[in-house]
Length: 397
Image (cartoon, rainbow, N blue to C red; front, side, top):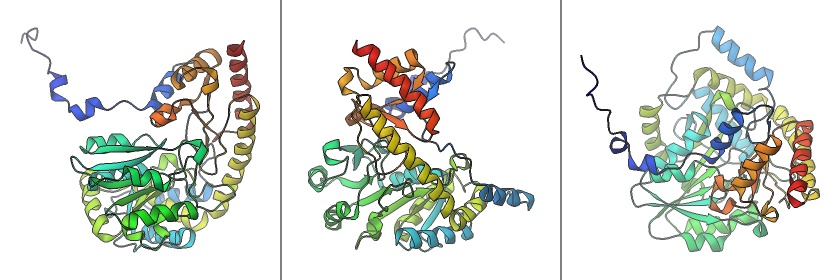
């Protein structure tokens, strides 16, 4: 057969325009650059440097030994959903029915995807608080929705204010995405910050997707879920998971909680797209929730030491740094250098072999900042800051 005259498919015509129009993740860009270089000191990964606590791994080993390697119920094993329900009552003061109001998902990312896809139709608006995690806006766009961005600022501690929320709401608004504790800023919303937001939402037909994946990683304050406020449980979808607090990133396990009217619809998407979350991970997560408080506290205390040192270090070398109260990131301003966020990160990587993430990867309001993860040892952070200090001195000369 002569194949010389066989034409290649017209991929540009065949691919979805929505997909082609989405920009690649700004985080992945710098991971890929760093992966091809020798001797990199990375501060870019949002992943705990702790191993998953042994007793959690031991439960997974036991599950394997007992042949628990088959599909589970679509919404997850009931034992895990019950453990999630117990945990949320104990830690968040919110009760969810394990049989009708919880879906175990493939990481918190799938929970976010399920929530947005089930709510957003073409032409609907979703309010997104930025800077924030990179996936919200693309998923809204893939659904044909319109992202409406609220930019937060350091002068307001990177919090959502009621004035900005009121200004963003229109008759087309369906969803508010509330990402606190925040990646990348480390900002939190206290009860007194959430109350006026809840007051606005109670008088509007809007669902809040509350991404609380860093809920256990707060410093000097206790996380408050907006779902725990009066009248908010029925208008909130809570997203959480095991990756950050329990050092279980590779286990790919999260969960989505809400009223049955919402969860039953999201379960259909989950059934067709995923079927169920990893079985062994689910059994391990039961033990994480029921026996992991001490380990979570131990890791959080270590993060707090790094947090305090790193904020002080950036301020000392001349990069103004907002003090985060949650997650494991700092978000120093690099505006004084005259570089854009991407130029700063590219030059730092090439000249000093230090990898950080440009702030504009988390939305346009992140321009002029860099995200630095402190999910690394203190000695690793010290070496990196020394290199950053050298970089700054060389470019001030």
